[in-house]
Length: 219
Image 1 (cartoon, rainbow, N blue to C red):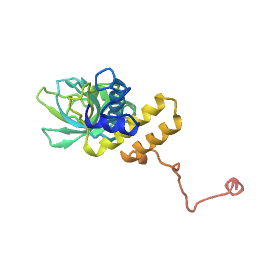
Image 2: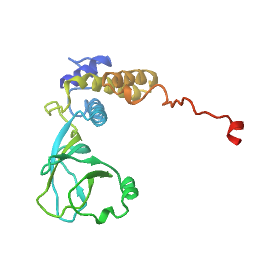
Image 3: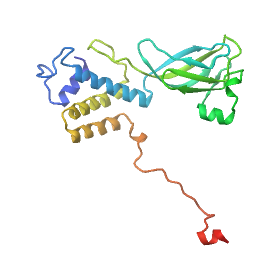
Image 4: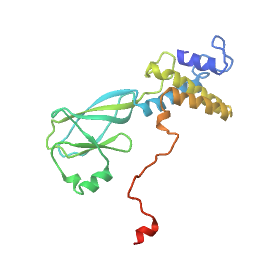
């Protein structure tokens, strides 16, 4: 039983020394460990709190590449860097590229932009004209799920409390207590600093001057 699991048990009212339901074995702790893993995934994905660098060798006349990790999972690219030219690449998408340059798939030369395609795939603009170019990708990753108390927890220390609160929220949700589950989930979101991603007020646009009534517009 690791430190995070012990804190969750304390908050749900379970004894840490002699638990009744969540015993210190793989079967008894499965629910708690699954909830902790879910919290880790949510927070690392939303905040980019777990990052790794991926070195991507480019190939002549190739636009699309598979991004794969050993152990962890690819989330998204935070920054792409052209090692040869010491230049940061711009992020874009297929729709924008098609509007700006309908023949973008035919262009060759130095890579200027990158874009995501579904899960594990990355596209670039333009196609390299040689095989010796390299991109350095700083990526947000999703840690592999831990399954025992001896496995390392790949999580920043300042997010540990938020993960504990998330696991407590899932516990109450599994017991059908929606009110307490919501309270603990809100605490987790606030502790992790994710509340700013869900603004309380809709975006507004203000206009000063130049306003015409419907009657004036007809004149």
